[in-house]
Length: 639
Ligand code: SAM
Image (cartoon, rainbow, N blue to C red; front, side, top):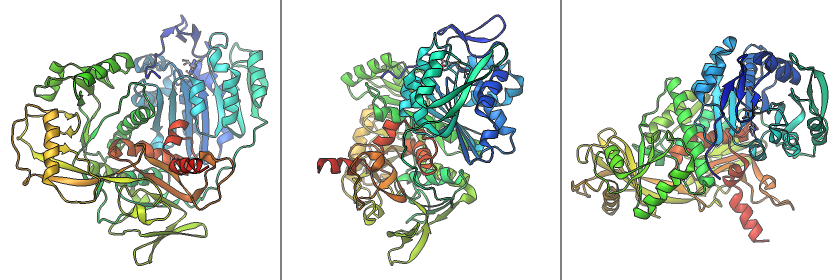
């Protein structure tokens, strides 16, 4: 799959109505965009009355376009005293508008000015994939599914209350009205879900009926005589969702990046979280490093791991921005990161990949050796990938920022190692090493990284997590050529942070937790690959550094979701969704050396699973990180 996306080609009709040159059609009624949004899409779906008093309401729009329907819906939500606590707005879009084009269009809608500006400020890089944006302190969540609507909806995991069907004219844009797409909408529909559209074409009406909706004609907007609206009447039998515990109390075990990230995601949803850690302070284990690097992962075929990493990388930037705005800025410098080619063959591959990827330069570009040398501040024989938004961050400051943002919703309990986990009635009871009860809660999230707790719980002991020791060397500032940007090759090197460059990291399959001179030597070999001109010699017996343990998995993907229950009877239909789970017991585990990049989006994903919200990750990625995948494969192998 090519990661490129063709942005919209915008023009204006003589009366000022925005027009797509690609489809030769108007974005909204010439009789007025906001009026059409309210009449066709809001009233057509019985909104705002239909969402009154709901905890959560989910809208799916096919064809985000200028964002007008979204802005009109957000305004209606804002002005409604009976609004739902949370509005999830999912929107497909194959040709997103550039932000400058959005601005031109938005100028015409004065009453929506303030919201439109917030949308433009949050507008993502135009790359295929899913981009989750938050507004109104996280109560209005917009998930943009950039790419073809039909393939996006095939991957969507959500229960939709209202559909806005707003493709261009079906004669010019048949893919937005295909029977397959409308069938998929019906599959995603919550019981009694509604839909509305300005389109009354006979074949669209028939396709809607065949999909299970009951379309009826209603008076249209402006010069359009009619429109269609209706509800879902027939539906396939769906798996009943697990009953939700409404106490909104969770225990999180492990206060590293994963644990702090999920604690914050639950706290902002109104949960009370008790966060336990064996150490006295958060971020004391693997997440305690002085600086880690932040970059995406590219692959020639843009494989699942690359797509997941890209989504996480982009989401992290938004998450950090929110922390800044809340007054808790984590320490970091995202002024660009250089990934130097390993050798001449790798350099050719790197150059080719970016020549054909279609990625915007603001995300990644190939730099030839002279430019790489300029960025590095030192000669380098090879070029590399330049990620302008990459850099380094200080993981403990990110953990503390998440905890601060969670505020009173998070209670941290240090020096509190949990040694056992037992199910009692509707709750999990957490025990210390002496069998004393430490806490109980309906929901428990295990986020212990590579700490020994992992293997002491029977519920997680079977998970294939392997601790891999990693030693970072700290090189005093002034001992290397001045370095402005983080750089990596077969290791990584940061600019000086608190007077120290971080150089890492070794890989060893043992549990020794003190510094080793031999691993400093290995790291200095890594330094020679990144900065061949660094000539300073170091006494490896005197160098400082830090040892941490990465929690790795056999497929290098994390374990995120409900934990499998290996003692329960297996269903005959052995697939991931049907695999038996421990009720209320979740994992956010196996983040390897990517915790810094992954934690924010994976935590949002897990919070979505726990709260039965639309998921921010596509179905293939959701399954690829499901903690039950290894148990499922083992069962299948066993026949
Ligand atoms: N609702 C929009 C608004 O408020 O401005 C107007 C939508 S416009 C009528 C139709 C949109 O569908 C365009 O933005 C177009 O790029 C998008 N579109 C067309 N074909 C698509 C496809 N196959 N998948 C996803 N989006 C598509």
